[in-house]
Amino acid sequence: MLGLLWLWFGVVHAAMLLDGGWREAREGDTPAAVLEEFRKGQLAAFDPSLLHAFPREDLGSWVVLRPQPPWVDEERVLTISPPALGRITVYDGTGQPISRLALDEVGGPTLGHGRLAYRYPASVPASTLILLKLDPMEGLSPPLSFQMESLTVFLGRDAHWLTLFSACFAVMLTMALMALCFALMLRDNTFFWYAGYIFCYALIQSIQTGFLFHPLEAGWLAPSASLLESTSIALSVAFAALFMTRFCELQRFAPLLRAPVLALAIGMPLLALMRSSPIGLLVDVAQALVDPLLILGALLMLLTATVAACHGSRHAWFFLVGWTPLLALTALSTAQLSGALPDMGWISDASVVAGAFEAIVLSIGLGDRAVTMRRDRDMVRALADNDSLTGVLNRRAWSEAAERMLEESTGRPVVLLFLDLDRFKLLNDQQGHRAGDRALIEVAEALRAELRPADLLGRYGGEEFIAMLDGVVEEQAMQVATRLCRRVHRLEIPVNGEFMLSVSIGVAMRAIGDTLETLIERADQAMYQAKVNGRNQARLYDRPRGLPGEAWPRVTELEE
Image (tube, rainbow, N blue to C red; front, top):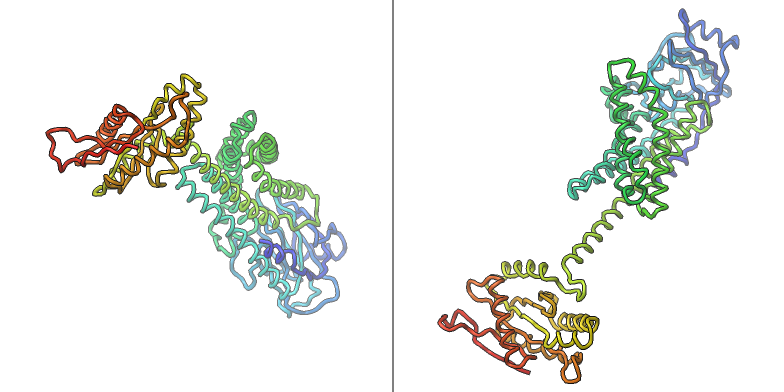
């Protein structure tokens, strides 16, 4: 982007000097009469290199340009910028029409990008007067500036303009399409509102700069360009308001301003519908309200984003960084319509660059939002799945994970360990619940350190833990259970003056037809047998009498 900005600002403007005069068109005017009035000094003088607002109501306006010496008879190009939707007729020095310039005219020997252009051959004397008729047009007419430059300089400027603006529009459309894809994948309307806003803004700028008509050659849209532009402006404001409401979290950080912003999002499309209505009164009302509402709406969103940022909205800062330059340029452009800042002709082009900059900044903000949302979602999921005291899986999350392990480990041995701390109630009664909580935390850390990362460890109840191990045969299961008993006992957590905290473990191997409930039930029974037989030991579930021996693992008991 910095390289493209260098291309834009680094162009050398070698324009030829021009004098100018103008007046409003009247009934009965002839090109020859207008030229004669100019020679007699009867037209209002103006500087063609500066922006000047010409009336385009009624019959339009006449503009006469006179090249200043030194004259060089070479191929040269008359350019008019910024391009307007209305047509401009070019006359020769004798008052004969030779060309009609308009945004939707994509033919001809010279095609200007972002400007209306007419090419003069070297055979036309450089001192020839230039007569232009600015035809009437609907809506506001932007101020115009005129330049005469050599064909070489024109082609260089045109190539730079096309490079820069193609890149800017590509950035905006790429960001919009990416956001639309994320909106569909994440089912988050924030990305959709952003995509709609950026797309509408790109459409507005493509109409105002003529990019839509050339190089895109969508001349068939010219008859409805004015309506399309006004509709796009209304929708862009609506999408921007909806986007900001969610992106800046107004419900949380600026609740009092959320309602006015949403009202703006609803009001702008209604004005667009009124302007396209066949009822004249509605059209007039909408026309009178649209500009004040645009200005107030822009200021409202700027104020709202500032308030949200000051109240702690991280993403409101992204909105301000991207939105403020565009708002400043819009204000400057509005000032130009009233005749101010005539020497700042670059403002209309800068708006496109600012749009691409905003698209990038807001895309970075959306990426940050997506990362934040994912982190928050993972945190919520962890809080929902993990026991708040020990950090291991809670009973619900462990049961769900265990069910999946049983389904995925078909054909492999699976063992379930049911652990119950010995004399834990006595520890709580004599030392208090805080001591009991510290003991549970230490035991959970010890169990987690002893088991493999793939083993499922959870807290099943108050002082009960449960673990499921995949791919572990009976002998290995008993070795693991015995190691856990020893590890807990080596913590040397005193219950009272006589006993240290220990654990009894019941071990159950998955058998044919086992479910998670039956496996837990058998491990629980084995744990109870370990308690009865003296605690601080691991015991494998005893096979019930009457069942085939091959259906159950061999009964084994290991004591410390």
